[in-house]
Amino acid sequence: GAVVSQHPSRVICKSGTSVKIECRSLDFQATTMFWYRQFPKQSLMLMATSNEGSKATYEQGVEKDKFLINHASLTLSTLTVTSAHPEDSSFYICSATSTSGRVNEQFFGPGTRLTVL
Amino acid sequence: TQLLEQSPQFLSIQEGENLTVYCNSSSVFSSLQWYRQEPGEGPVLLVTVVTGGEVKKLKRLTFQFGDARKDSSLHITAAQPGDTGLYLCADHHGSSNTGKLIFGQGTTLQVKP
Image (cartoon, rainbow over all chains, first blue to last red; front, side, top):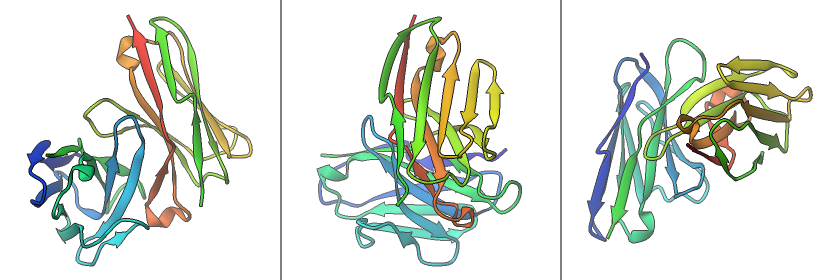
């Protein structure tokens, strides 16, 4: 149980285009989902917290107009990187917390590798 | 703002050797978690420790939590190539109710056969 999926696993796009990444909780309902980015050989940096049915809360320094987050249901959150540039190339990882079971136990997705040419 | 420092940042050892990774916090941990992440994948939770002085074992992995709850160590006995990966410590940011995690910068472990 407690599986989180991400789609796509890899994406390559041209500079200036927008890319949407999906995060799904497959076998549980997630009240909260988190989005992280990770550069090579570095740790995870939290970008934003996404709660179902409400606006996402962004960490300091993260542009909300560039990284659009939608959490329309208890099993799906999406991250859209708008007008992507090469410096946005990174590994994007989502995680989800369950509405039941252990409080604040996060389950991580497998990540999405974004390459902007 | 809480800072988590891990050491060493990189470690390359031969199969069969033992190793220890450390995680130190600038403030008391709410609840410390250790994760392992393999290249191209998301982190996988190894253990959660809450009580100062706590010791948990997971096969060849031993996790210790400092009495003052500001430091932790992960010891691997007889490392195997399958242990290769990025080891991350993490704590819940501020109150545990937010669910937000702060991660250390990670320790990259390479175990050579």
